[in-house]
Length: 130
Image (spheres, rainbow, N blue to C red):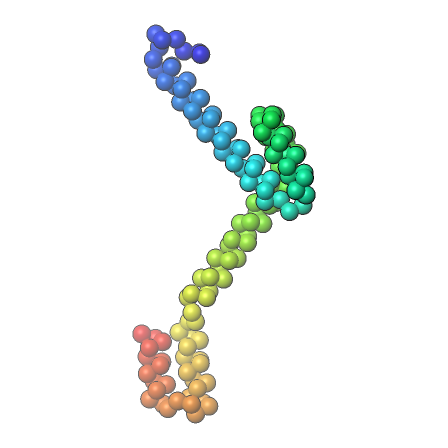
């Protein structure tokens, strides 16, 4: 330990540094394991070897994986974010419905085809605008 008992602030600071280093280490492990399981370009056996390597030699395994696969990790992360954004956009479009201009245009088509009367068109137009 760096701090002696005569400097309690240094002891507390040292404990905070150790705690945050541990949190970062756990975050790195979760990131590496998540990337290993997300990969579609490797076989199950290769994934198992990476997992075993990271478990048996944790610091070296994580560092080697980060160095060897850093470009692939970034690409897979970007692909996942794009897929999530596309799903979110599709959901928003499906829930939002049509705009008031679209609703008025549909009502106008119904009016022109004779399916609704002028008063019904006016009512639909007011609902779309209101």
